[in-house]
Amino acid sequence: MPDFKKREIAYKIRVGDLLKGNQIFDQSQETTNPKLLHIELGTNKLVRVNLIANIIDKYQSDGEKRFASLTVDDGSGQIKTRVFGEDLKKFENLTQGDTILIIGLLRSFNEELYILPEIIKKQDPRYLLVRKLEIEKDQPKPLTTNQKQEIKSLRDNIIDSIKAEEQNEGIDKDQIIMKFKDSKPELITQEIQKLLEEGIIYEPRPGRVRYLG
Image (cartoon, rainbow, N blue to C red; front, side, top):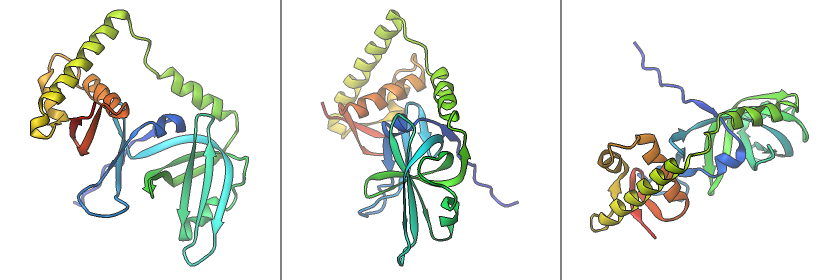
């Protein structure tokens, strides 16, 4: 039987949240434009996304390398979606001001994140609010004082563990998770992601972290 590659989840997300994620690139090849592997956001690794936004700009190049781009905005941020060659037909009936649903793959070029669309559909503008409320409903509830204290203690312990491994040029994330077995792995991963975003630690290579301070 042929092998079927598992289709990645298309996460429903707002642009502003997507842009806060940590972009992880393939560092195995020396190139000025490494391949984007995924975006780490909390405990999730995003490869595909599902978002609803308004088109605020449309551009098309009919030169030797034919491509087109749409700049979209959902009220939380802006991102481009791009097509190339024969796929330009996906943008044919779309104009500035349209509200669209985009399902596609995350890509990066010259350090700019964009979406390579698989599906694009026009939507009623009211769906922008529907999607916003849908995502807000799934957001975690506010933490209690005890939960905040527990997370702060875990965060401090994670930092101390990373600092202690500087002589070994860092520590693998999996090792940190194994070290704190009394805490949920997803919570540990979330705190590591926050430390990366805050610039307290950094990732010299995928899966390994070092203290930056």
